[in-house]
Image (spheres, helix red, strand yellow):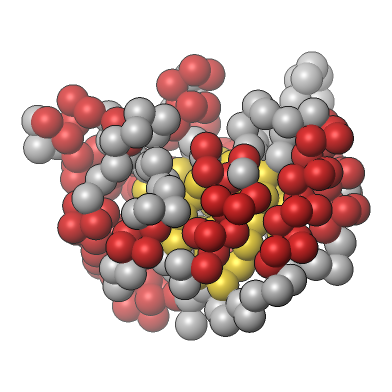
Amino acid sequence: MRSNIVAGNWKMNNDLAASNALVHEIMNQVAELTLENTRVIVAPTFVNLSSVVEVAKESAVEVAAQNMHQAASGAFTGEISGEMLKGIGIESVILGHSERRAYFGEDDALLAEKVNGALKNNLEVIFCFGEELEDRKSDNHFNVVESQLKNGVFHLEAAAWKNIVLAYEPVWAIGTGETASPEQAQEMHAFIRNLIVDTYGAEVANEVSILYGGSVKPANATEIFSNPDVDGGLIGGAALNADDFVSLVKSF
């Protein structure tokens, strides 16, 4: 059975003290919950990963990285490899986030390399993709999503999909206050799952968690997460407040 997942992407926020305090607060609240098939993940900035891993050790809260370099090692000043992440206890990494695509020029070919590098290090990949507003307005959103998936992860063998989580991000709904309607979210998530069925079969497709990322808040989480093909969320702003973030976990 695929997992429900609430993953908080902290982006470039929180110094060391604030990161430790936030994960402590999340841990304390999550400890009071009965998590049935639900995973809770936080993704701090690189410099705070090791500390947050140590704080969250032996709790129900998992820690993921926000990015990684595709190479195993080399003259790549300022970059972090998958082996380095594994060395400090990281088990998951977010790849392909719309901000990495938009601000740092990461294209499908590069992301496919990053996916390969992560899987070589036995890292779970939370793979992000989604359309821009103009794609949605021109009814090209399905084509864009299909292309990003085929180029980024559909080269993998079926066995690799046990380490893949998908995160659909309608870019027009990230940080804008706009949110895809529950019906729009379900429509796209069902389309994505059917693409996996067509490529890998129903057994693989039914085991893959597909998250929604795009201004999920306590006020709309239950309605979005209740859709049959929406398995949780990749959360931005609401992840920086423990009460808000844990309320999303409670939506399950």
